[in-house]
Amino acid sequence: MTNRNILRDFVVYSITSIRYLLFKGYLNLFLQDMAKFQQWRMYRVSSKGTLDYRIPWLVFSSISFLESWVKKNMQVFEYGSGGSTLYFAEKTEHVISVEHDKSWYDHAKKVILDRGVGNIHYTLLEPQPLTDSMERNCADPQQYVSCFKEYKGYEFSAYANAITHYPDDSFDLVVIDGRVRHSCIAHAMQKVKKNGALLLDNADRAYYLKPFPQLHEQDKWKLVNFIGHFPYGPASVVNTTKLFIKIA
Image: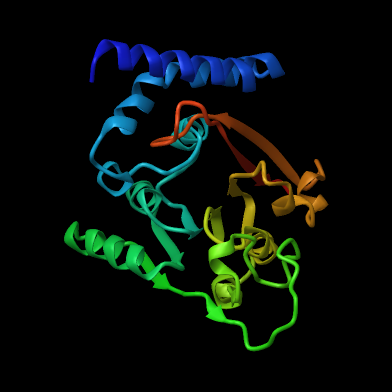
């Protein structure tokens, strides 16, 4: 890569961070985001993926927060697998991960087995064809259908319900970064321990959180908001990750 390419990336990265963070009053997030430029670029130009680096595909500032918040005795449940699965396995006692995509599942499972990681319970739960022709509202968490066109005609009820097999207050952290995230939230909230957290990625998609005003009740949940660049993402794009800490 030439110095010109590095400069171009830095300019685009900086303008994006200024536009979406500094100009909107997020000074601390802006400073954190700018401090991650070199790390962002390392991932962006690397031929290795998230599994190689064992890095979650989350906003950098949220990863920095997790570095100090996550503890070794924690139990983690995650919807959507990848570098985050290995990351949390390394830092916590046990990780339960569900994945909807078989090709990715097969690839990630091989990496997990090859590395001899023994504290991950990894399950494939693929979407199933709808058995009727009724129209469904993808913004309704009770419908279990995705708003993404490639999943039209399929439902994710088994996937979203995977966490219901565990007692309430089972998990210190529930990560929601897969399909039908609003459906996953509906089942996950009561599974989070007191002082545990629910982490939602791509939280700028309003329909994920609209059905759950209780997550914004300050006597029940404490919101920690992260906005910024993320590993492997374009310089011109920022993401939103929200962490809801259960206080009651």
